[in-house]
Image (cartoon, rainbow over all chains, first blue to last red; front, side):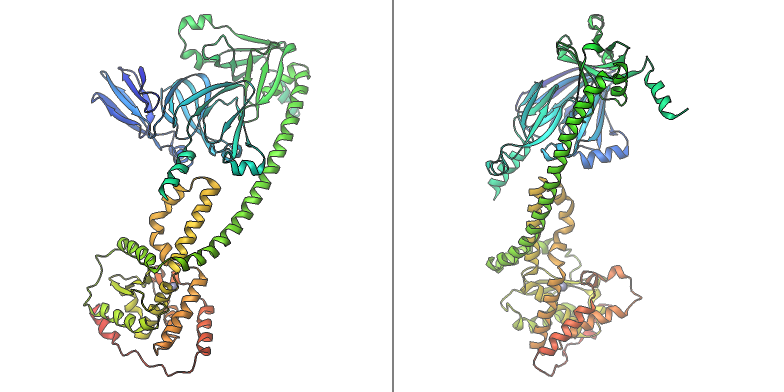
Length: 218
Length: 395
Ligand SMILES: [Zn+2]
């Protein structure tokens, strides 16, 4: 299965070329266009309860779509916000994904929703996270550009900017400065990550967008 | 055999495999999922079946197994769960990691207790960190709660003050917007006897309202619900169910006086500004109130505008009673309608909407009676409007 990430980095989308026997699983709203030779089946994402949990706790759709073809065809998959898309190949390892970042994966990858903990919640990374494990490629998107960084020691990320990280990464919440300077500088809470492992960060945060939009609405 | 002996036996299973992974620069992308065994002298990791399934044969042939002698292994704990065990070689360029339960125990056991000691130290450090985190989490939660409570009451107080500065035209705009969402197909015509009846009552009460120039309007909706409400700005809705249930015109006048008071006391706007304040507070605390709002907004739209706090209800009772008194009608007409509804036990409770949004409190009836006793004695006349004709027209 050939997958190309096009129009990077601002309006990235996936062009998936399917051959007979190929299968790709995508987030329910991701399909923008497809050949008439491609078959789409919708299935609930990992059973009703898990699907419900994902829908209500992880702000991810209850359903995923599965695309196959008998001859050949292509699909275009997009994400709802402007930004880059990256591809990561899992080889028996695991990656945690910010809910909402997931776009598509190969069938060997299993999706699960997990409790991320209060530390993650406090640092603006959400109370829940998607756990992607198994083998195969996954594609996920972010708002803005995506940076990756191999963390060996400790690193500091502004809250709301962490898109994905490996389970070997530990997350702690911290204040950017003292209590008052943190509150008034607008930096507020930061996320301290400790390796070893890789993190994926987005260059923009939704909180920032919300603040900017609110400031221009009123 | 005691259970702990069995446990030790199981831990000593030489073939026990753990699922984990390896970080090493020789691996494409630097990481791979691995199956891990612990021999009496070494930690051995090999690519997991899942990893092999996506590797091509030449890559598999090149892929070694990774080994760390127990004697030079340095352990650490960490990861997202805090339970991941990292084993590093002397050069610290190879890391074998595992999160499975039992791994640390077997590791400690095999190393003759040496690695358990290292792990124990790390755990102690972690416990200290967790302890501090929990302390600050508790401090934060208490402070947030305190701020929340203070904020809530400040919002309520500020809302009352702020309303006074908002022009009445704002009430009218909000009221009209809400009116558009109310079902209008069932609306009775302006020349229907029921509409003329309630309009006449409102016209008589109007001169005695706290804001006489308010643009009061009343419509009647065909519905079996026993209900009536006022929107901000003075638009009111009376359901035919209420007109059928009322025994006298005075009881209808009592309900209308009460509802007009909600409008003149601007309770709807208070509710809106309080709700906005609370939503803003939630937004501030949890960062995203969007989902919450979306859930509630449709259902809340009119109910926010037409259901009030107990304090507001008492205010509307007394203001309504004052208006009735000024208009020459008995203030206890409000209580009379409560009484009448209370006596009818045979009714389906779900239909009595006005009662459920106006919980029947003996206290309220009492406070109306008490208020009446403070008013100058006055002969209250009957309402010379014919409710019977109206009721017949609704059959
Ligand atoms: Zn009321």
